[in-house]
Image 1 (tube, one colour):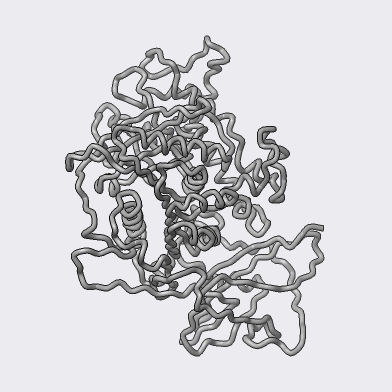
Image 2: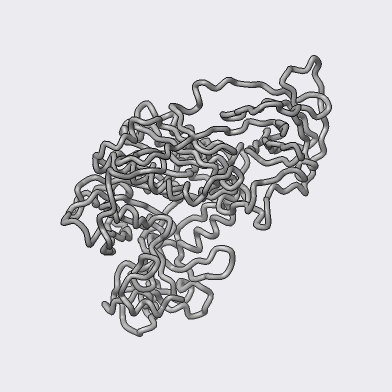
Length: 581
């Protein structure tokens, strides 16, 4: 079948795994013979850790149990604004039963599934989950992305290293916001932080203002969701159900945690608007059991009201050099701007640390370039690994099925990579992860392949040109020309019933994005049929010149693979703002 190229820079790679079983296997997604599952259970404790400025951070510690007689463990820390654990009022009958539930928690508690790791516990790692200040059951407030989060993270790392159950080796892991808290922590260079495993991360201003355009569709809904979570609301309706974070302290000592959450008297999902305490000592929070308390959980959550809304202040940072104190963040942020308040500004300090870094990205994520750039920038100073999947921001993707691959195998393989990486750098196991090719990439249509670098050294730049007749030519046109286009504002590149796309991040299309009909609303250029298999790998660069009758112009560029039937499958895209009048 002949195929066409529409403006195409196709990520095309392959990777074959040997089928022969070996006593010791260590390669991407496969790992055996170097370490094994030794612990059948775990014990959990909760505590507040006081930071140097007095703010108390909520922490859950899970320790391996029912295994070898080991008293000290390496630790994996995940440091989240999305609650280290939830407590679900609908699971109230379980709260009286103090045993573990099917989710891995105690009673009605549910450990954050994106942070909790049975696999690490089984292999002899302590797992530590912490709520960032201004979230969960932690006290304090925060401005998202602020450097103070890195200070807190470094203090948590050193607190872990001093615990009687710690062997002094700490790793951090996490995706998206948790990757940001991890990189901020690593930039402080805490002595006991030995390795970081970070996934699908934005690096600040340039990822919120993609190509200079605010990602408003995501930012508005995400900011509201984050605020709802951080205020420990109970709202189970809508696309994203929210339940409160689990309390840390069982103040009445009855073994239950649900009764530590104040009564929501008006039933609106929030208990904060029902009481004026501590401003009015005569209006203290009330609890189901009627017992007196010091109101620890209420006071911690009340602090979170001081969190500025991320979407509101970010929408005012129109330029990367806008002073943060001018967008409502307060005088303490004077001198900070879109660059200095972003994680990308801390890369030099991370490079000085030399800490090993495993980067995981998705070709269809909104921020694949952050991942590849950080890897390529720090590789010479930091032992580095790069894994690029076909995933969207939550790493799921219809491109697995499109390519004939198993999504479940790939997602479980990322957990395997975490174990391989931490085994090498936290346990000192020489499993070869540091001597194999550092890059593993997914080739759409072919599968996985390992490489020695990114971008590929053997890559050859190939030019295509806009030509007459809406064609994309491999030869430069003999004369200059122009095409006219009237913007069609009905164009919407949300795909499938859920209208998902890479920019909404947590909404993944049900099938590969088919732009066959959407292309009719756009100005398109199509290549001649490709008469042989062609691998096109790399970062696309487009140069074009335009004039507009509008004062401001935003351009959206799509690269597509067109099959013989005319079906146009989206490969990648990017928006950019041309300028201001």
